[in-house]
Each structure stands twice: as structure tokens, then as C-alpha cells.
Length: 101
Length: 464
Image (cartoon, rainbow over all chains, first blue to last red; front, side):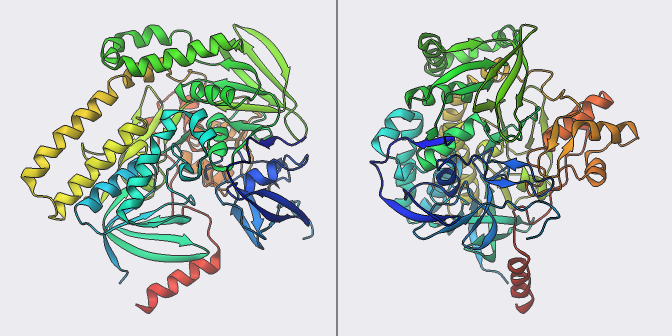
């Protein structure tokens, strides 16, 4: 089960984003982090570059930087304050430290 | 030279919007920069796109922001959403990043209106997915319309915690239990401030109503919680806590923690401005005068970033800063300003009447930062309380020294999550007050920036 769910969808239209190869239809007003956290059973949005620990956003307001994700090929984007857009490609940064890319 | 504007406002929350409305009303050339995609700050986050359901559930504290945002939009102020400011200099120079490109610009005056943040308090397991700030969940709901998908445990102390409990209950989120860390003796210590607070019975009644709703809801409200921790291998599985001296454990997927609100001081610290320490609420805040002006005549601070007072006071503080700047820009005659200032100050004083009571009532517990040695203090570089204490035992006395030795505060959040804790741990070990210590040094860029983007701004400067 996902950590978050949509409260009410009737207020907005939807867009389709690509999350690690899977097409997701999400409300157009949602953020990248919220879209990922309310999808499937994946409750981590990155691995710590220091130890590889699984992490998820903590502050949701651009302070903690735990939400950093790869958006449209650009790494380290603040997923908790960036809104989804049609066709956006989103990947979690799951590399283990010292590991192969 | 970079182009010059009359006023550059950093942050489009209550203070920034109000300052922009006021300053543009006097014909000043205003630029508002904000990292969120839409105006409103944290309090009124995403309010332009909020549906009727959301406005109703979050109540007037949220919905009244709509007027402010609409008035701001109607002014046609130059506003850049999604613009992340990453540098500010004492001469009014500001650098910001927008869609992967950075621009340098200068303001005759700068108003820093970047607001406040939930106080980051490290505890065992706070780095596990499933552990969030309680206010964070509120902010996330505003910008995404998503709510916790399973029952939550709420924990901590402060007016915002009560507000979030009300919001989540209104949204139908199941609250398993509320673990209240408000120290037992706070009410007594707050009583001397009650008469002044009673000037604003409406404000106090709001608090009383929130507490009554919590009681009526039947949610378990455990008081006198002194310690808590999160456990799990890859994500949160269990929460342990101590209440009234007895240990307990509960299972949960979601743990929402709130230990008060502190000003965001990254820019004022970057600018080397003087900061003062609040011994009740235990936070740093920049030294400003009645208008929010700092010792540097170009730089103003407005809103919760100057001191945590809440949303309505933030709008009034934004207005005071704008009036002062309008006078300095000769857009407002001194005698007219002299008439306008007392009206705004009177309103502000009325709003602030309950604050000393509320601040004393929710004074943080004394063991807030007495974390176990294994607790991770710096989430980015994964530095434990034990490693920090070890360097202190070896003779380090300054947070910046410890940063250099352990990397605590050197990761991508740049010390925003661990800075307070680091100072408090050092202060405790040396039996000092944190105010005698130098906080972590902040350097530009204060937000993550690619080297390519940084190098292109530098080239632009050289070509001038």
C-alpha cells in the first residue's frame, strides 16, 4: 500500500507522467514527490548518497532536500515543490555509494 | 551592471505578498521571487488552485489568503514563481535560478520574506521513510491534494500540531494517537502572560476549541511524553515512547512529528547580519528595527523570518517594511508615512497580544536535543550525536570546527536540518547557552545549483 492517497480528484484534470518506465495518470496540480508517494508500495524516493539508506521527503517545503529526484534527466531536483507536467520523466536516485552507475 | 529594481522581495508568502502590494501601490518597481510555482508561501500554499473542499476543510485561516493572493495578482507585480534565490549580497545583489538558468539582479532594497520552518529535532529513526514533519503533511496536502493512506501517529507540541490534527481529522485521516510532549509545568509558567492574551479572546478560544475538538474526537491523547523513537529496517514499522516515566511501543506506517516553528535564517546569516537568540522558543532571529530594517540599510526582513508571529502579523510586518522603503525611495512623504505607521503598528500589537502566553505555553521541553549517541544528527552526511560528542571531548568548542571535522552540516541541505541540533549539543556538552556559540556559516549558493549554471552566471558578470 502507498503511504499517501488522493483526497479528492474532482477539482482538477490529470496529466500522464513516466515514473521509471511506468505511465501514471496523476492530478495536474500535484507535486512530483506526492505523485510518487501515492503510487504503489514504493515509500522511498531516493537512497542516501552517503550510505545508500532508503529515504523519503521529510519537510515537504524545500528545506531538508530528502526529496531530491531525477526529473527529465536532471538529477537532484526538489520533487516536493515541483509540479508535475505532461510527459515528465521521473526517476528515483537509487545508486549505492561507490557502486557502478 | 545587473539591472536595478526598487525592491526585490524574496518569498511570496503572507509577508512578501503584503509588502509587494503596499510597495507597488506607491509606484515602486517591485520584483517578487519565490521558489514555489504559485504565490501563497507555506500558510497559503497553492491557494489559487484549492478546490471548495480544501478551502472548507482548512477553514478561514487558509481561505483568507485567497484575498491577499488575488489582490497581489491584480496589482500586476513582476512575480517569478519557480525562481530559487541562491545568493544575496550586502549591496542588494541577488542571484536566482529559473528553469535551469541563473540571473543576477540588484535591488535598491531587498525584503527577505522567506518565513519559518518546522524545527528539525533529531531522534532515533527520524531518517526512516514514513517519518515526516506534521506541518509538512499539511503543506503536502495543500500542494498535492494527497493525504496519509493509513492511520497516523502524531507527536510533539505547539499550536501548529493542534491545527494539523484538526485538518487531518477533517480530511478523514485516521489518527491512532497523539503523543503530546508539551512539558507539564508550561501552563503555570505561562499564566503571568494570560491577562495580556485575554485581550484577544478570539485567538485563545480558537486554541481552546482545537483542544476541545481533540478531546471530543475520542482520539487517544497521551500527555507528558518525554522521549520517542522510530524503528524499522527500511521504513517505519514501530514507534516507542516514554510517557509519565513508562515506556510503550506501537506499530505504525506513519509518524508525524512537530516540535515548534523557527525562522529561516539562511539569507540573513549568509549576509552576516546580527542574530539574536530567543531563550523561550530556542531559536535565532535576525536583529531588525520596528520596520524590519537590519543594520544594513539595503536589507529588510519581514514576516516569520524576522520572528515567528504567524500569518496575519506577517502581512502587517511586510507592510511596515514596504512603507519604510517607500519613504526612502521618496514615493511616500514623511508626514503621510507618520500617519500610516501607527495604524499598522496598532493592528500588529493587537495581533501579538496572545503571543507571549502561547510561546510560554509551548516552550520546548528541556531535553529536546538530549539525543542518544547513535541518533543521526546530520541526515545528509550521516553524522551521529556520538561522533559530535567525541569531537567535543577531543577539545572542539565551535560548531563550525565540528562541521569541518565530521562533515555535519556539509550535505545537500547545507545544515538546515542539523544546525540547531549541533549548536544545542555543543552547548549542552560545554554547559553554555547556544547564544554564545557561532551558528554554522552559510555560504552561497544557498541552494543546489549545477556547476554549468554557476559558471554561466560568472561569465555573464565578466562580460559586463
